[in-house]
Amino acid sequence: MAKNVDVAIIGGGIMGTSIAYHLAKRGMKDVVIFEREEALGTGSTGKCAGGVRLQFSTAANIEMSRISIAAFERFEEEMDESVDFKRNGYLFVLTNESDLEAFRANAKQQRQMGVPVDVLTPEEARGVVAELFIDDLVGATFCGADGIANPHAIVQGYAKNAHRLGVNIVRSSEVSGVEVAGGRVRTIIAGGERWETQWVVNAAGPWAKGVGEMAGVNVPVEPVRRQYFLTQPMPWIAETFPLLIDWGTGVYMHRESGGMLIGESDPNEPPSFNQQVDWDFLARVGEHAIARVPRVEEAEIQNAVAGLYEVSPDHNAIIGKVPELENFVCANGFSGHGMQHAPAVGLALAELIVDGRSSSVELEPYRIERFQEDAVPELNVI
Image (cartoon, helix red, strand yellow):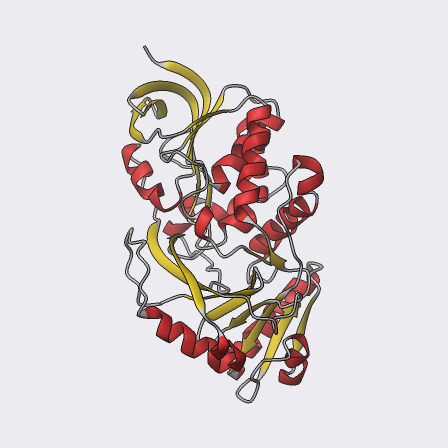
């Protein structure tokens, strides 16, 4: 016999747990999270670099960040879980004039939305990071309201409070089937059990496309490997060291446990579920990091992490209902922005499911139908 549930959430990472918590907070009963692994947040969430920023190129993503950052600021008080949110800022350094003009235009829009971002000269950028090599820079942008947070703690905070409010979290339970009839999902099969449901939320991260296929929905998300490397502690790294991004090479770094987290996106990385560390890639990442911050040459690598981005065609999320099924909801395709936007997405989808529409977040830019139109891409992707 099938069990009954009001909302079935597929995926127990930061997105699934946020959505579950916000639904339960709004009074929704019989919410169930289905997680394929034994532990929550072990997929993309547990392997992300932890960045949280307002410096996006689209108004929709800036607003997502504003709502989410406000949630992170009050997280410990509301959720009884410290997420170690440090607002050391994001520093984007730029090596050509065309990028500088694009970031200058972004900064204008960001300031219009109340974001405290500054366009800096190379010398001013070195005032933020004293060890910065600036001879080839034409400028930079810096927002001190940006920072980093602990993704594992965020998941644990959402999960324990969702559970406190009555959410059922079913671990080691992979969804293997979705049954559809009359334009609705009727039943899902998870861990060999049948669950009749009123709503299904696809929060499966890099596996979102496969979940969509089971329901007959095309969710255009591809998994792409991303890697970063962790160094031993280095005493010269200031407590206030920001998240530094060299836009020309794509290398990024921030302070982590007294050392440095250093990563870079490989534009030639093909879509796959490969999560093996490519140690040969370290040579390229290290070269770019040392070129921008020469003292990184002193670093000793102690660990490496490889995880998956869930990448959409325009690097923007896919959030909301789909035209094929009236009760199938997407929370997918965040392209590296999922952790930092999870609070806003959880709030928006709880409103959508409970009230019929989101009143806190404008979901129009995130409609899945946009791929049949002229989608506006997010340009600030790392």
